[in-house]
Image (cartoon, rainbow, N blue to C red):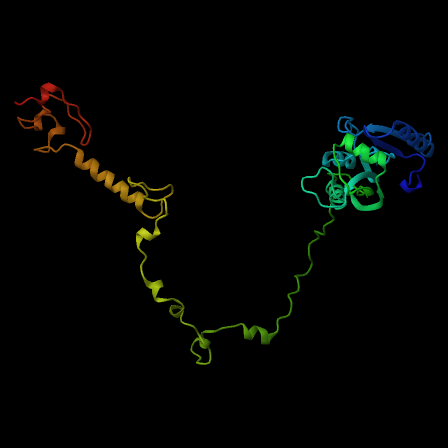
Length: 312
């Protein structure tokens, strides 16, 4: 009991599960109440009901989970996060859990390293292993019954972790010096030799000792050739029997198809012999099929009846 560091006046939570022996749980709670005294408190919670217990943040100084002899509880990420939430800043968590000594894929029982990582991800610090023990025959049977798991490479590990000395979501004001400067900032000294080394004047351009590279020499003959517009098209642009531009076409196919459509529309419109059909009867010839019809705009579609299409 001294390993947990429990003293008078502390609030302690004991987490148990269906594999915990009832007599061992009662014996542990009685010993804890003796240590905490009248000013302290010992709460007993079932691991499956911990998330629904609605404890306030920072409710307990110490949480003991799975420490009851014979217990084979597994701690999920949600349970560990809830324990970290209800711990007071600086409080400690002690848990005991069966672990695998060999890496097994898709195993519900974790290795010690994965269990320590889970405690760290829940927000605890100073996570460390305290003790390893072999499973007793009763615990092996409990693992098979309550966890539906069987393995010859199981051990029981005791691990502890602490909550940082601040609450999750807490904030602190930063002290920034915003006083006005009475004097301008001092610029660092520049080595004249270094400044001269990195300075290139117009006179240096005519100096034969300065080796300048012609930018055209960096290009290959292939770089001067104008690319074929077809090579600039995306693989899906214009594919298939019907030419069709892809979305956000940048190769010019969309504009080309638009021009072709405009030309087709212009060629499909009927041509007038006199060119004045749309102006009205005063400007139409005697054989105009639009005689008797009101004037219309150029390019506007006009429907002729059967009587208008008969020969004059």
